[in-house]
Length: 124
Picture 1 (cartoon, rainbow, N blue to C red):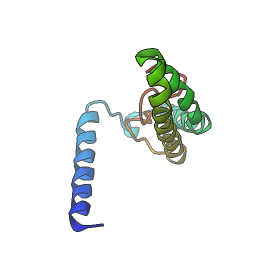
Picture 2: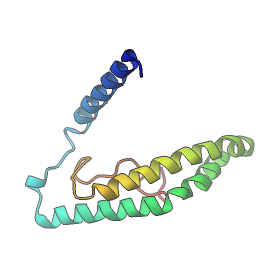
Picture 3: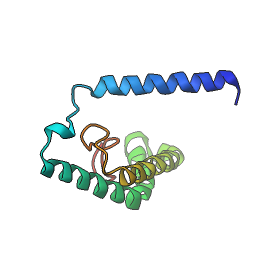
Picture 4: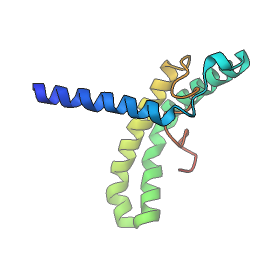
């Protein structure tokens, strides 16, 4: 990797971290303010959500084909839907792995989902 590319990646990463902290600063709850039951509920919800997204991430493929066909027509659904589906399958599955591996960490927010909708079967 060239030096310029490394600097660009570093600047973008740092900017993203600061942006995310500023965006969620008002919404974040802390473990110190939560009861033990709330912490356990948050951890278990995050673990179940992660496992569910790993197991059902592949359902993004037919979902994206259907949604694209419904919103933009059958031809575009057949052409663009599979690409969107493959991308969202990867995103949802990787997010599920991340949530499963980090279920004990109250991030992002207070055990909040990495993105919305939290599950493949929920409406966007």
